[in-house]
Every structure is written in structure tokens, then in C-alpha cells.
Image 1 (spheres, rainbow, N blue to C red):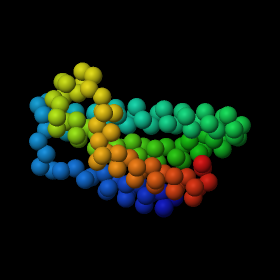
Image 2 (spheres, rainbow, N blue to C red):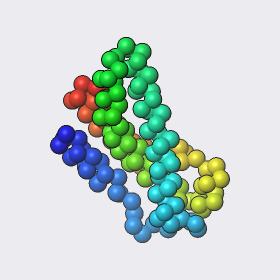
Image 3 (spheres, rainbow, N blue to C red):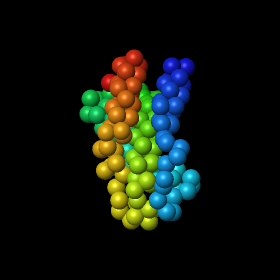
Image 4 (tube, rainbow, N blue to C red):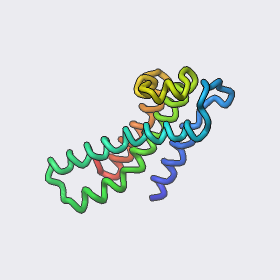
Length: 137
């Protein structure tokens, strides 16, 4: 448990590579920014957890064991999603007003930027390492 907490702290620290002198487009404030990050996270985490569950069910994994694994790994998925969503929303907020972003601009486009891809790759590697250590893969 201590290893997971340490991992989460390290990942959160890595996600704070945001430039504090950035120029954001109109409409963005801390509330809207975090709301956009939360929406992005949910769009990533929920489908990933469902896919993990489906894979476990297809392998006829014990329901109780699968249930416990899903709860155990959800912070790992959330940490990965948080890192990439902070990056993507930060980049989107620099080039789009809140109205442009809310009216259909997709954060996925910004996730493809080298900076955000790097954040995602680092997070995925950590998740794989933790999954192997916990024998969840």
C-alpha cells in the first residue's frame, strides 16, 4: 500500500510541469480548468476500468477477486488519466477560449502532442510496472 501511495505522489508531482506564466484564452479560470480535467479523466478512466473488467470476465476470473482488483487499480488509471488530461487541457486552454473548448473541441487532439504523449507514456510504464508487481496483468 505504501508503494502505491508513493507512486501516486510521484506521478502527481510529475504532472505539475505546467508553465505558471502561460497565457490562457478567455473564459478559463481555475474552476473551469479543473472541471475540464475532471471530464477528461472520467472519459478515460471509466472505459478503461470497464475494459479491464471485461477482460477479467472473459478469462473467467473469480468475481470477488476481479471486483477487488478493479478497486485496487482504479487509482492507477486515475493517476494516468490525470497526468495526460492536465497536459491536454493546459495546452487546449492556451489556444482555445473556454467556449471553443466546450463547444466540441476535443482534448484528444492535444493528447497527441509530443509533450502530452510523453506524459502518457511515462504513466503507462508506471502502471505496467505496478500491475506486474501486483500480478494484475
